[in-house]
Length: 214
Image 1 (tube, one colour):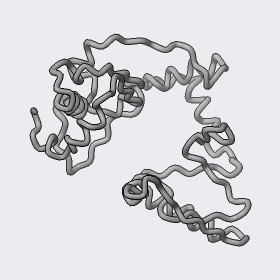
Image 2 (cartoon, rainbow, N blue to C red; image 1 turned 90 degrees about the horizontal axis):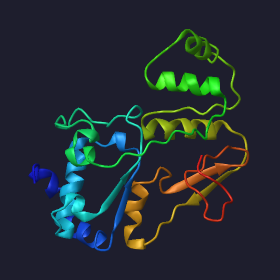
Image 3 (cartoon, one colour; image 1 turned 60 degrees about the vertical axis):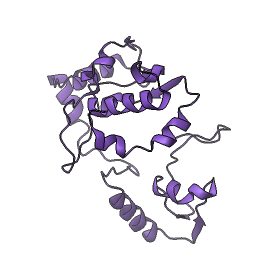
């Protein structure tokens, strides 16, 4: 392995077990994966499967847009030698399919402006479009924060200020031996506090279609 210390951080026995019967792996938002990390994934797949082919012979399906979110790297991490996934040679050799139809917007003028913004272009029409959104009054707007602690503080402040009876629900996870690990990786914590009338943003899809993510 090019980075021995990285391989030591991987649970190789678990990787061998998980990849035993895997034929396809899908990685979404590939723009957020560095070439270094993609190389590590490749090496782990080869090690786990015992197959020297790229990614251990597993068919890799990557989705995303390299003109959107870049890889995130903290100051404590060693600078990546390949900051972008497309710098890793096996990815360069993959077959590329381009999606051309937008399903989220139908207004042609807005689509043209969004394509400009995506390329870092601000035309006069684009400037006018953005300026019109500044200081526009919004009803119950959603605030975005980079850190979970800030989100939790804002939610708690708004919940405390809202009138009504507080209901507390304890979070449970299965399998039970993995409960602590699961709770550390979901943004709801060990308990959920709700009041009637307080909006709730759902973070997953209901398998019966009763509610959807977002």
